[in-house]
Image 1: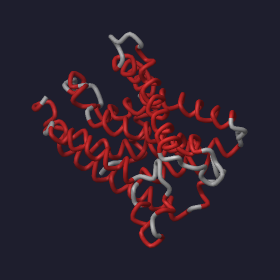
Image 2: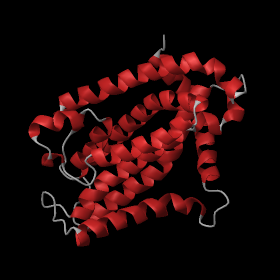
Image 3: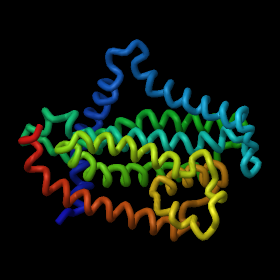
Length: 266
């Protein structure tokens, strides 16, 4: 049976290798392009600007809870960028690094971690940019902002748990990768990113709270906008970590079962 303590120890002991592979992965993704790593920043910024323009001038949205819409939108979009990119890239991590899978000495359970760390490099830049945006609008940083680290950790744990399922299946079915892309689009529209959960009748909100992405997006907004401490909603914590734990357990069982066949297929 999978031992979470041994798993954490393995990550800590391999931290230098994970760090090195993550940096190389980030460089490889944008190698050959003129702007290089700048594309990791340009594309998300462009998306936020387009969304802000459409909803501010097209739909003429008003401030939400007296917070400028651009801040409210960015506080939801930036964690979503991290989640959506992590969904897709971690699903393909084994296929992309097939040359490592065939090496007996390499621990392939680290591949999703490498992808997560690689994406976190860019995400941390956007978190700093987001805080600067709040400062420009007069929202000075508070000590509660440090709990963003908790939500980053929670997002990383959820993605890693899910990646052991998705990356294992993608090895045997390329069509599953297309299904993941469709799922990401579905989650984008069903997660309260540019709409407020209060629009949903109270009796149905529980169904949306079962979506782990909601917990992350809402956590960023609670931190930056409402200065709400994460332990003030114990039920939300319980739901998120229970679902993440169940996904992780299923992922580990599936990964261990299919792992011996990876090299044969690749």
